[in-house]
Image (cartoon, rainbow, N blue to C red; front, top):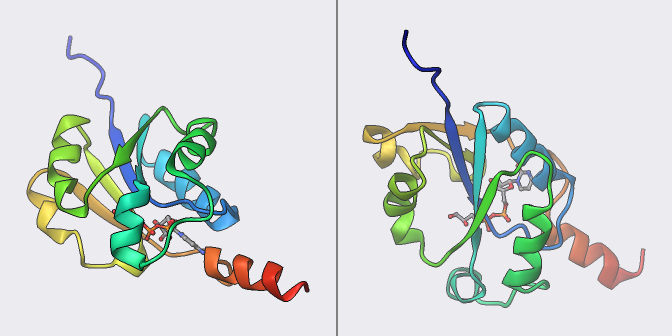
Amino acid sequence: MSSPVSLTVITFGTFDVFHVGHLRVIERAAALGDRLVVGVSADELNLRKKGREPVFSQDERLAIVAALKPVDEVFVEESLELKRDYILKYGADVLVMGDDWAGRFDEFEDVCKVVYLPRTPAISTTAVIEKISAGS
Ligand code: C2G
């Protein structure tokens, strides 16, 4: 008898000022497999990538993502260049990213399936920060 096949899904993100768009992508990613692993961008990676510190520290962002029901495992994503290593290390069968990254990770199709999910419209960390700053 063959053993049951279990699919591991991996996704990455900063997940700063956690909002429903983040939740939706995590839920939809989890639905594509049996185990969901999430790489949470390091503070240092964010500083390099976006030129600013996240509002919440990597330990706080990691704790929030780890507490979500669909998430089985979290780790700190230290560098964008290490994606292939993370995919292999966690034995991911599927890489899921929001479609703001469409096409950017097609190079990993030799080691896993790559899926880009449509972003949840009309919400982003930047929009939330701007709304709070404006006091509206
Ligand atoms: N997202 C979404 N809908 C939104 C906002 C975000 O589906 N309205 C998704 C993004 O497409 C991404 C995930 O939520 O898949 C996390 O978003 P960010 O925290 O903005 O992630 P980012 O800074 O793009 O980091 O290795 C890649 C990076 O770590 C991705």
